[in-house]
Length: 447
Image (cartoon, rainbow, N blue to C red; front, side, top):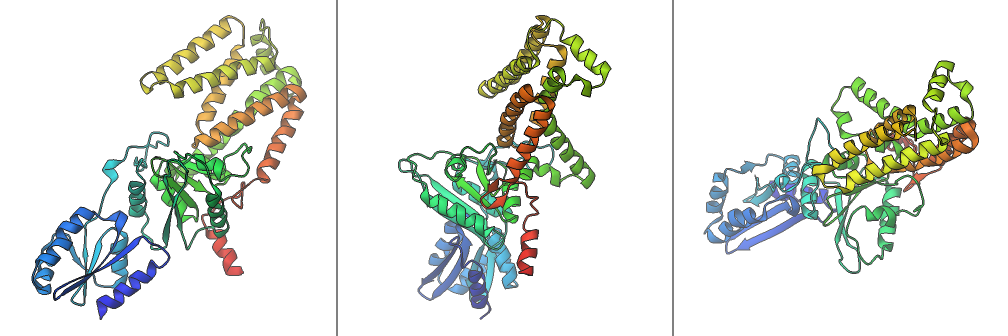
């Protein structure tokens, strides 16, 4: 029996997941078996066009003719084709030793918003929604593999939101998965409302400067990382997901890098890394050169800097701290203000503040240029969590440069690199270049 063998094979492909639903329908002299993934099908259409007619029609032959007349009907030629149909959101019907596919796919793309945080020029603008099952539907619609496992948990003593742990069983990092599951079982918080809360709940290094998980709203980034063997966390009611383990270089890439040619992609990545160096080191270099080691800069440039600081009553350290402090206030204000006026308020505030400060001789013109360059460099970092960490690191290096000069800045930067080398994210080295499972498959083959 072709249909029975095909059904058994398809069911065996989902032996490690509870996502696949198999139903045996039998009434009078009629018998039918259906297979489907609940989160991918329209259950109302399934009930209306398959279940109800099955019980209403008198014979199997009459019901088979009815199915073949449906516009969504497709005949399945092989078990591999049947597996693909199930993964795409079709319903498999085994009737009279034949296997059919009925396309009652549930598309929830219209129920979600466009990306507002991780915007791109090219590629999809689809973002995750507040509904967990909608997010599961979107991810499964993009990731057609039976090895995709979705485990559900109830966390939080008061509101008890449903939490989904998603991973590809064949590609996942086993050590990272075990660590995440173990820590997930230990969570005993009273209220959990957002996915980002797990960044602290699952992370033992709560005082770490750098994030250990990627926070994203993009389904394409989620699918891309699932294929790389990572684990995804979703919480019902939250439009964002957490991805672990995360390495430093994950925070410097965007999905748009995959849509460009090789040279353009590398050029954009180089711009981002250059922006990080400017953001971290430029204020410290200014302080070290202006106050400790003016001889390291060309004489003409040093004279220009000294001339612009004529009449400024503060040291270079206080000047940098003063300007960066107000820049941080402007950034925070632009986030909290309504969208209609946030951009205008930040722009006008920056222009007025920069002009007034230089005219009052509270800061030099060079300092305004440096602060602007630092602010722009901060914005090129794709993931906000890494941008926040870089801003704090920059403050530490400014303090070190104000005490020890350029030598202290160099030593502080080397200490930062040593700190990053010593960090791990759920068992993965934080400065590892992640090749999405290729290195692990090679190592497993050698073992």
